[in-house]
Picture 1 (cartoon, helix red, strand yellow):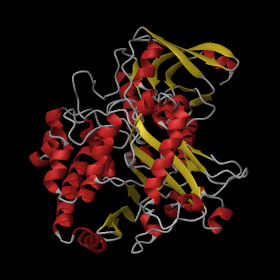
Picture 2 (cartoon, rainbow, N blue to C red):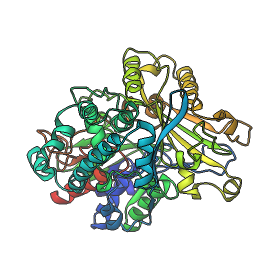
Picture 3 (cartoon, rainbow, N blue to C red):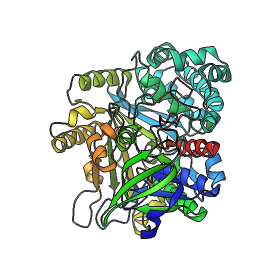
Length: 520
């Protein structure tokens, strides 16, 4: 940002250049508003970035966020983004040992294959029929709920009427998801596969009466009106690169290395104080949009900080020389790892691990899910790595709340990574470590991030990937018209902590921009 820019008054100053802040910047600049984005880090993108984490290795991995489901095509069209996603032909594979032999459940590859996989695992037709009924129901809900995310918040009754299915409303919005899963499914493994969507980054039991697991489940099954989770072509950085380009082209100024430290506002005019490596400054604005968490927003405005919502995940990035062989020889590893590969995620296993972690113990058999980006989109690897058959693996561990790491983050991270990979190895015909690539210094190409790492690197309070506990996608007493409003009339949230935030969606950025444009 040129030195003289600090004396300007902007129509909008956006604090944080993550993907939501960039969406807001692009919308406002395209509407003719003067926009300045202040980003603390030396680059934009926030958690939706691609990096080369391994020294001397030409592999650009989606380091934090890694799949796309909740990004509306409307935003891509409105902003003219050169960004694509690619669907996965396999939805999931879940290995298990039964009757002393390795087997598993492969979902995807066509209706016939999926039906046969259910029959092979369960010995009958009932579980697949239940699967079809259940996901038919969530698909209908998705078609009706997803379009509302970029509209003013509906009331609870309006959303209920829009869904127009009392059984679905009860199952997803009123009773714990565990009740529905146990009513609909009999097989423990099938139950576990269904439950996992309720636990991504959310530390909760299937029967938690507060229903955080239901809110998490809902956001994981409504994306795009289908619930599909797609691979960002070129990695997650391709999206934020396209958003940054759209914002700049429209006239927004993106200032990296500028950390906002205070917001002063009287409701009509605001000043944002910032600091850089070279000093401090203040910029004036008619509106301030904050892409940081509600916790950070309160710190900036001097309001009482809400209690951080605890994060509960382990994120592991890997580069392999080859995909490992499976003990279940009926499944090709290229299919098993192309979708979501579930590890130690049986229904009873998930309940037991939650109880362990809630008691403050590191899980003995930590659950996780894994997928291989490069099978669907090899463009993130250099040509030489592609020719040599290298592949990426992304692992997301569940039920690992931040409280478990507060004593010694580094030691616990190592222990958890070791036990997590041991659970995977139990289903492999060769140890994963034998398949890991090495970097230019001879070190294995693997890195792990705990909630405390994410809190330190990305300023996510408690390491929570959603900025705070997910909220229902309807209006409540203090949510405002768009779900982005704050107690300060000209300060709005445009990050994941807004109502209908969380995930790589751009929805809070869109809604914050709409709220600002309505006020003008």
